[in-house]
Length: 515
Image (cartoon, rainbow, N blue to C red; front, side, top):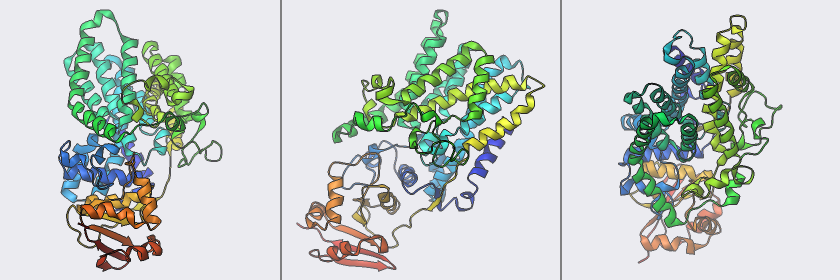
């Protein structure tokens, strides 16, 4: 396994070779979701999770409970928080997390496939299946589309949980339930999508492998799942209470818009290098192309592997694909009847669970090829093909500079320009790093009235500023060429306005409170 891990590390390092020299200052992809995620990691490092202070992420001031607007990233807390504590650099912590996910995913899938393809360790020398299973999961083409959604890369809990289940069902050792508990717990803390979709896979697994003679073991599995879920319940309740208070709910039309289609299996990421110009790259999150190499190995695995096990993972992959089709073309409409399911916007992300299923099937295919002396050589070009089909490229963006001048702690700040898109991510990043609250925000949800507020400010309507000034002083940052000069002119005409600082192209104003 150590050698396989080194290979996965090397591939990830080459894939992100341009990022490595600027690991502390730049992010891969775009300044939207990555910067939002960096801000969340930094916020959790500064506040004890689940406390009132932690729930009040400092965006969309004066709104409260803003942490519940997006992912919490507590699954990454043990890795990223110590890095932030030691270095004060959440960008570094985020980049370490992203790079680590590739290796952790590969190693976890390696362990699962090794368990399945070498039962009882009867063939300890045959590790090809495990290696290819890890390679197929860590470097599935699907990850290229989600290279800016690090929460979707935090998928290693799935194979760990499945490893524990298979081992326990085979041997009945209670120690194997620990692996299931650890994997299950990590999945629940990784992201909201796996929290919904992975339990469906486990339910399918339980139905497929259930035998009445093992009833005591099934009770132990259920008890372990409940025990590993209980610590997450306060977090889930916190999300439900706060999202309901704001009336957050995804419409069926919005969910359908982020669903896959029947042709999505041929859709490659817009970041993909191979097959560009040959396959469509306009499917965005619905790019479900599994890769020809992985698909070929999976077919071989289904045809030659241990029928009961490999057939389950093939059927489960198909089931997850059907869920990815959303409420119009697939069975996803059944999920919409469950509590909390309407907070999930992108059914296409169910394909993340399908990738681990296909990796298992591919591992079986590789194990079969490795056992055939005459065609074993095919594994080398197939491995290269897997990596090539997963290869992606994208720009690097510099993390925004912090506010160069002092602002009072917990001050309310309007950071101009204010928008309703990803360009607000830098404003809330500065707020987290400089300990103030910002009117701007970029997240999974917008609070009621935010779009109107941004439009009113950009339309020079002074009434938009009054609610903030009635609460206290409002500080305004105007950042040079990014701001429409007419907005600055309007700002400088406000009653009582005071320019408190200017440095280079940064201007900071104070609008005193109106009592």
